Length: 432
Image 1 (cartoon, rainbow, N blue to C red):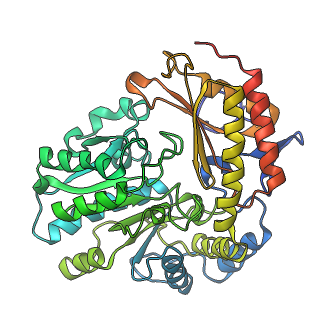
Image 2: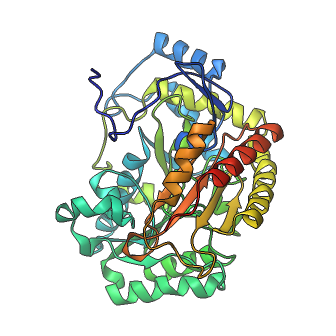
Image 3: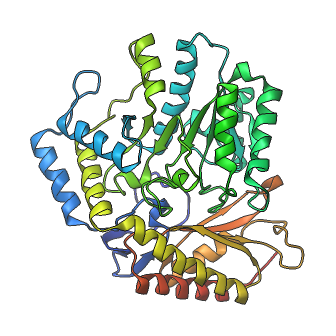
């Protein structure tokens, strides 16, 4: 009997080793990690240099509490990360995971407005669908009904107004006007922030707005005194072919940038946020402290892992590599779409790619979701890990597949991924 509390009742293979884009179980079976876990393992598995950096840090200084000390490794990492992200004057707040990071951003936005004498601002506008994390605050912010339903009695729903998802077929600037209208309906004096994933991840499989969308969002937030929070937990750190996905929209700078997943690329728990000088100075000149914190925030060993990962990303040109391999994979998905008409839409930004599944006759989601999960299970049998999802449409309908192999994936490995996905699609019949 196992004493592990598993996430579900399905059987789990026992992973014993990782190397590059591959994982191996205890029977010696190999899996191509086509989703980097949950778009986490950006530099691939088994990078010895990351482990060595962590071990050296653990031997020298394994832990300090953030209310008592800083550390040289945290100071170095914060400076390098800010430069890498193109936000060199920002301040880095470190935590252990993406949910903690979005929760921190929500609290920071609230405190910022309170310090400015606008304590009536408490609402955080997000989109539906969206996913910002599993803690109660980040889950309340999320527009993902299947994950929220059980916990709705614990949430103050009026604090989390929801905006419709962007439509890439519309003018981006016109599409963004929905945010202005929602802020006006809620009352600008009650709205603290708008939080969005620049490229949507788990809830809507690599959906990206049209050009001009975030430029207009920035203007609307400025006009209304609302902070703009970019949730780059999944899309950041080179994943979308730029240091930050928001950089693909011209000249747009958020007030708070949320990061996670690729920061330490799965080698250690590490996430955080980058706060603009205005947000940081307002809080520090007000209360003199951010009224929030976690025990393991800025953990030196995790931060050392982040430094080693950043060395690899920069030293091996993985941001450019994400653009190149992303183009290859998107072209391959388009070829699969011509063979399998229930791939209604395929799309991608760098190495964040998605396929939306549905009825080719109507162009609508199937009445009962489950096709994506079945394709994902078939792919797993063939040795390919994907990231299936459902529930993006009204009533819990909708199926999609999210793909995002490590940024270090080679052209040959990308071709193997496409071949295995084609086999899985062929093996799993469409049943509605």
